[in-house]
Structure formats: C-alpha cells, structure tokens
Length: 139
Image 1: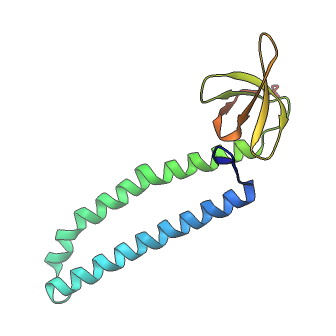
Image 2: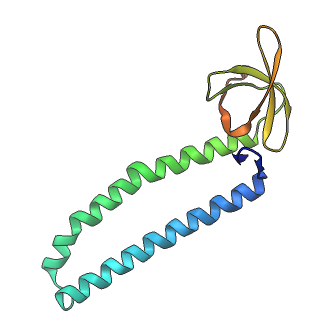
Image 3: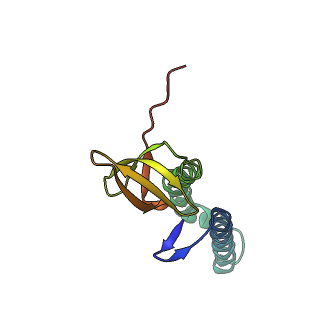
C-alpha cells in the first residue's frame, strides 16, 4: 500500500503500523480517563456523589461516541484491508475514481487493471480500490 507517491510499504509493515496506532489511541484514551479521575478526586477533595453525577453525562457521551463512531469505522477499515489483501488476478474492481476494470497483475502495493472497452492497461495503487465487484457463482 502506498502512503505517498513513491513510498512503498508492505502489508506486514502497514499492519504493524496500524497496530501501533491502535495501541497509541488506546493508551491515550486510558490516560485521559486516568487524568479525568485524578482531576475529579483532587477538585472535590475525595469521592462525592454529586461529583459523580456531574461528570456522568460527559462519560456517557464519550461511550456513545465510541460505540457509534469509532467501533464501526474500525470494523469497516478491517474489512477494507482484508479485501485489499485478498485481491487476485481476474477480480473485477472499482476504483475510488470510478474506473471499473479487471485485475491483470497484483504487485506489492499496486495492481494492473484492464479497462473496457479498449483493453487499456492502467496501474493503480491498491489503496485506490474501492470495491471488488467480481460476481460469485451461486452455490
């Protein structure tokens, strides 16, 4: 997958980088929660039920945003990465730019497409593949 033109990154390296980013986000979230709890206890001089009720809406909003926005996006990103990893010759694909073609060759971070009707060959970056439209036979 190419992060910038001319910068080649293998799938394993990309997966490692994505894992590091996910870990950093998780550490950041846990750090934020710990800082919030520390601030809460220091500001009120200890545990107090009124302080818990005043911070509860903020915590509920964070949890709601996490489950409504972050989790679905992570699932979508995982399925897209799995789709890119499973690309093979003969698959019909659609790019982000709207080009539809058949994969002729799969390289590390690029694919070669044959575009109808003239059979034009185009090399595109894997990250530009939006969907695989290969018709699967009915079982």
